[in-house]
Structure formats: C-alpha cells, structure tokens
Length: 137
Image 1 (cartoon, rainbow, N blue to C red):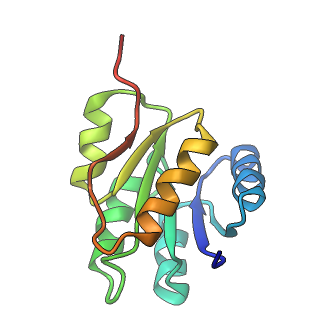
Image 2: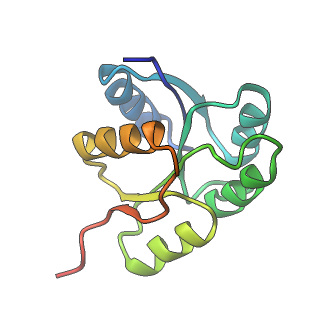
Image 3: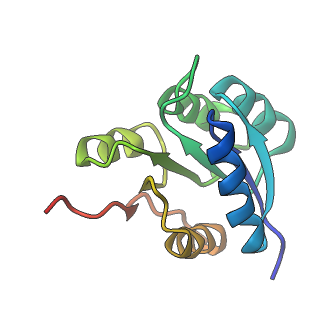
C-alpha cells in the first residue's frame, strides 16, 4: 500500500499526539498543525493526501479553514474529514457545507476512520456524504 500523508489539525496537544499515534499505526505519514492558519499554510506548501480537521480551532476555525483550503490552487480535491466533539446533525451539515468530505464525532472510531480515509484516498470521485456520526437515539 502507498504511504499516504494526512495533515492532522488539532489544537489540543494530547489529543493530537494520540491521534497521530493511531494514524501512524495504520500506516499513514502524519503532519501536524495546531490551528487553522498553520493548516492552510501546510496545505499550500505540502499538499497532503488528506486532512483530518478539528472544527473548533482558535483563530480560523475548521469551517473557515476548510473553505479556504478548497480555494487554494490544486487543493480542491484533497479529502477533508471533519472531526469534532459536537456530535449533532447540525454540525455534520455545517461541516459538509464548508467543504468537508466526511464527518467524525469524537471520540473517533479509528477503525472506521481508517476505512473512510482509504475510501476517500482511492476513490476516483470524492463523495461528500460519508459520515462517522451515529444518529441520536
């Protein structure tokens, strides 16, 4: 399998470290950003294969960052996966509207995330309806 680079955008250092370990265990190369502005700059410079974006970030939040990344030359096709503690359908819809391809609520199911990442990375046309959100009971 090709080694894919995932940009992990998370402002909480402990969460970022745990997510990095889980992604690396699944064979992904991981780059990190602690806020939306860092993420935008890294995407501009390095064009990662996929982005895992916390939506509650200081400065430019994940929604603003996803919109701006979609406008960068050559970056519109990079899969962006929203990752947030806000486990509600409204947040899912807001993420997809901002340009995210998938939505995961924290805590993240890494087996499911791995499957979704691989689907997005190997798809010829990137879907906009993959969800890691369980419907409220």
